[in-house]
Image (cartoon, rainbow, N blue to C red; front, side, top):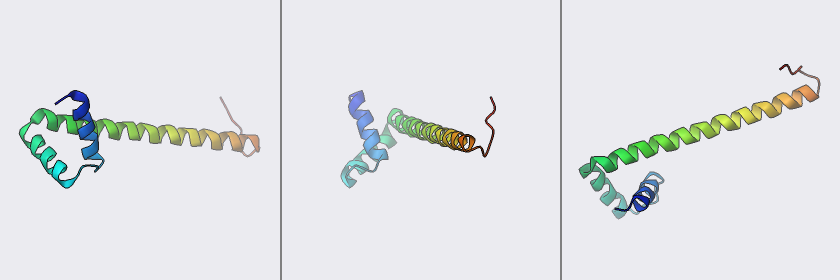
Length: 80
């Protein structure tokens, strides 16, 4: 299976975008091919890590905005 098509299938599987027939077939492939199963596990970890990083970046951005606003209003003193 072509790498791009395989990665697309993994993403569709993880996102629940496969029909029941496709899902059953893909799960059978995972059972019989440890490399594909490992790819699914690694891709799941990769997506989770990227989402966690995005959430942390968003939180830091929000904290910076709040700090700037509170500093401008004189409620806190911003130190370097």
